[in-house]
Figure 1 (cartoon, helix red, strand yellow):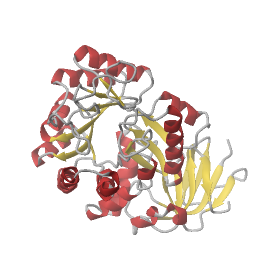
Figure 2: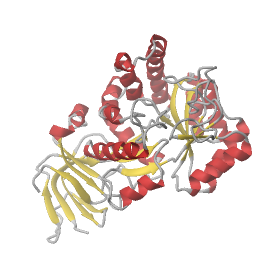
Figure 3: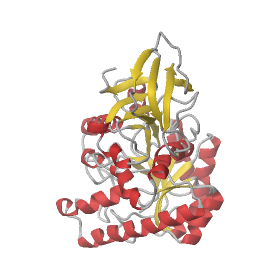
Figure 4: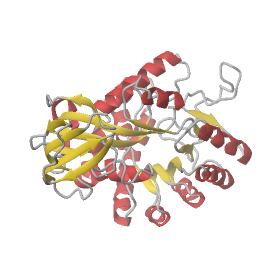
Length: 413
């Protein structure tokens, strides 16, 4: 593999205080081989003169969905070919926006990972959950009360992103099946949703304690962890008791429960842009007024939870939870929405170092350090001073490197 030497770079490092000036960074065999203020001698390397621009770790989206064709995850009626094309487009656009890694939260599978690994599809590193686990009538059982079976006669959630399982044995088997197929972590639904709530009764919590414990046990047996879609206070507490490591959304929890998240060492993954984007498109999507009101209330409560998480030292990750190719265009706006709640330094930390630790890749992703994966961005401007420079990648994102390979180059190097 060609070696690459970045010269005259202003680095965004783990400290995220200020940019570090005038560094050389050598990349070899897909990794960062050296980081030095003194010039690095590498005559055989491809030279990239950063010319005083920012060199920073690639962004990580810890909650993405690539298999949607519209705002609704109930996409089982769409042809698989269309879903595959949409997924490929999502992945490519995601990488070109500066996300060099994503954690897919239900829908992507081993086939997608293989296409990426073999270079048939261009996109970020993929940590996929396979099909998310949901109970009958749970947050990812998208059947209406009038729907009982799918077109093939099987009881299913009417969605390509989830599988229904009930009872400890069935839940354990479903978890093992996703792990057998290569899932890098398990995803489950531990409460109802806010955009597509059950028509019967929106759940405060889902899966029994024994079922939750079984999923966590299976994940830990494979050296991985569980991420849980959960909005409610009771739901989060039950997840924490069972050992769930990654709490997604959590918009309706109390401050006491946020403190418990810190005690348990759980990660908090808020996803504001997916809610905001749905409010903005409500008229076009014909969302009922009651749902829009619920979304607005959910956003407001989520902001309070974020403030409590900062207060209690909960590690705050960054995810987007966007569905469909049109929604993906808003992926970078999650950074902007958090400016009301946090500093550019902490937001970038969430999108890099915190997310790397969440993915169990601390020191390998989300950092510029010797031995780390060479997933790098060259940016015009200083995102630590003005985070919004990242929001216009067509203008300010000059280079994208993933695994030591330059995927976008507007420096003319």
